Length: 394
Image (cartoon, rainbow, N blue to C red; front, side, top):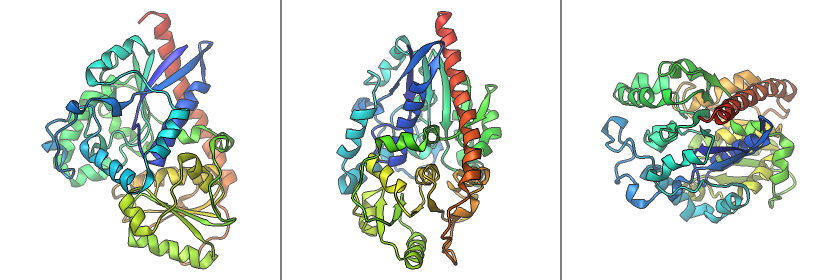
């Protein structure tokens, strides 16, 4: 058995974070390495003791002002946002039930116990999702696997923002962030990143291979997602509207699509405050969320993973962004959409007409299949290298 420990966001109430973690676990456990099967556990950051948490601070602080940058825990801001959504809307139990059924966790409860995991696991992988976005992780070194002495690599890690744009406009942030990258990224034997346009930027900090790979949810085929989907209450035909924030332009786009199609809307929001503003009273489990996308006539979303699942299930969809292409997190979408030939589905204003046809999914999925094959090859090669070191007694 090749034992693998993963580090990403755990115990979330975000559908994308939850399902990408499940996808990477499933993809790894489907692989055979050296004639042996693989087993994947997720590091339960939520179990780290309260005493190790960073002291309360303004979540809008820039990185240079942070004094607890090496703390491995998810910062207070990250927890407050999630707890707000739990209290107001989702109910943590809907996600914990999914985790109880599908995820397994490493036996680790504090920062000081992390080195002991090297006696249990043959490889460590950080990713996917935006674990290198300091707004959420505060540059915590655990998300770079600093504790690992066994084989360590990343898979589909993301900054979640256009770092090149951010740092050009925020030089005070750039220097501190680059110090953290320079200190931690070289520890990884190979760096699998999610957004190809930042590959050259990452290469500044390491001599290790830097390889663009696809998000883990793409590693599973539609029928594999269908197996865990659970039927949600819904009309026969509907628009599925899922957002991670409230914007007037998003509501305007939805009104246009609803008017032109005549379809009812099922709304789901991430944060509780947004759910109340949008009257988004649907409260699906992760399995029901998959079902709602799978069976929708249209998906309208600003979510990265909402977009990815729309592509997996070949839906008519629109991905809403705010501002210009290069701003903030918009660059997560465009490079992938250009590769798949789906750029016209990314909009930042109300469209004049609503396209009643499906995108060219034959072309998109042919290109996606190539990307998935390449990404699985990257994953397999790293696990094989870890297995070889295990055999050699490292």
